[in-house]
Image 1 (cartoon, rainbow, N blue to C red):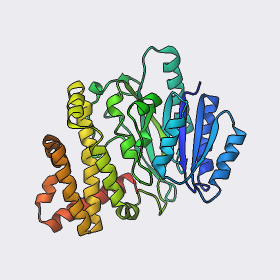
Image 2 (cartoon, rainbow, N blue to C red):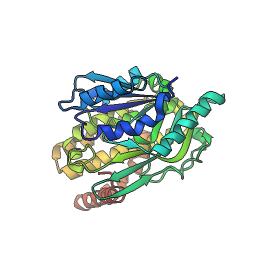
Image 3 (cartoon, rainbow, N blue to C red):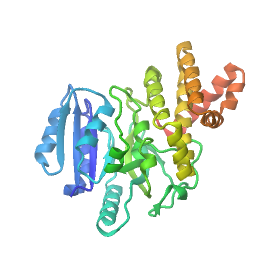
Image 4 (cartoon, one colour):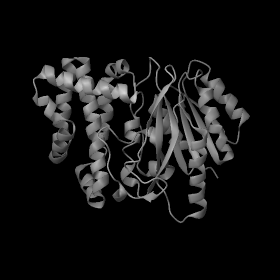
Length: 344
């Protein structure tokens, strides 16, 4: 039995892949590691084959034409045999002690409990290896650690706090039931992965462990500010997919069943729109400003109530200031957060 499937989408990752895979091997034959070589032009494919040959009962190497990060995740979800699924980017790694705590907790619940946990939430750490500094993101204010929870047990999220792919380990059946299929050749699809399955989650557990180690510092990294500005069109694509994941009727049913998860989903949308808006300001492009106006209109047409809530959450009061002041305030807040949390 495989308790966890680790999906490792990999493109030209020969400089990082060894660190990533070695951090996943301590799970032994209780886990499977699926390395998805996404049309790499370096030695990534050879390294994947090497690990598959050395650890045939643990590692699989899948080779495919280049389709982007989302495409690699899709293949992993299709091929996974593990009860739970975790995506680990090829330049990231996991902390061994935290890893074994999570794995043992999963084994304990699967083997000895009648309860099914749909989602495990854990901490993640931003690592600036070039500067020797790191920053932990935790959810202690949201959940009681090591307790079985429902959405009704959620406490509060801080203004900038939300779920990301790095913090989530879903039951594989939940991802499949939610129909998670990420767009190809598109960055920032982790926002879809972290949003779309949530209404299917009934029970979850938070473990206060620094499981996921997120590497920050590459110039070509997708969360680098220059890269994000260059790819604003992809940010719009992802934001629209999240907006349209559930229709009005479905959202009303979700809210009726659990007001707190509906409230969180609104937060997630709000943060996405806020980030998109700030990137448009950073780009100083009339084209993207016009596209941002269209996005607000689309949101209003989807649900006027949601539109008002998102407007409020997204600090729209700032936009009532004269444009030069509004722009400076929003960009200053974004860059302050970036410095504090080291996310790019």
